[in-house]
Image (cartoon, rainbow, N blue to C red; front, top):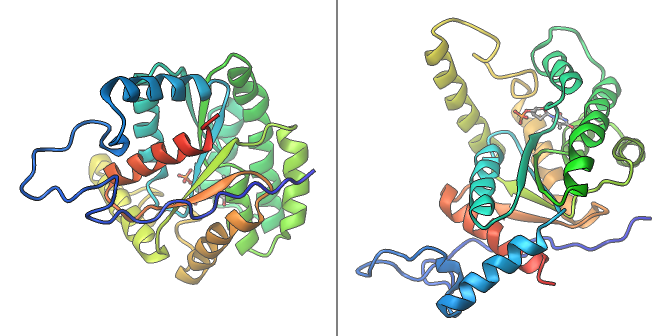
Length: 273
Ligand code: TMP
């Protein structure tokens, strides 16, 4: 069944004088948890404890175009939630199982020609293993799972390569065996900005390695055309209307701290009760 709880565009870019981000010029530095202004100190603590409680056994996905900052945000969110008492498991898709890391290597760094449908099936195979081996047991144990990419990525990337959306969703139903995210957060950035960021990341990696390697020009996906990445971004932005599970867009081009604050606020609203 495809219920349509859509939380799209709940989040607006922060304005200097907004409720959560008051004008900080000539003022004392912001307190921690500034986004809960209005709640007394005890209320803040209670709200946090409740959030940790409500996130038990919840599955959160961070997704978006290359260079949207989702890996950074996954780490920041995991740190924050751990600090609130959540038991957090951070994973990446594809990967994080022996099979998944092998598939990741073939998909991202391999030189073999892979058709869009074969790509789709490989991503699904890695995902099926990840769900079976890591995600399902963690959720059953009451952990909060944060996953860097999931089915939403296949819809965007393989969708942009022409694979039918309904076929992807049908394959995903089989692969994930009923384990769908409780919330998918799409970090939206213009394709060019995302690619510039990954270019910088790859150059930094190169400097560290001091030897040429496959990351010089990005992985197989990063190396695709700007038009392709613009199509990927378009699908991600439209996904909140069509994804059969809760999803929302956050502006990923803002400074990392603001993005984290907005994601946390989104979690508060989504898991209110
Ligand atoms: P990342 O995990 O470092 O973001 O890189 C994974 C790359 O694989 C990225 O370019 C997006 C792409 N990808 C797909 O094309 N389809 C998928 O289903 C997933 C999960 C990733």
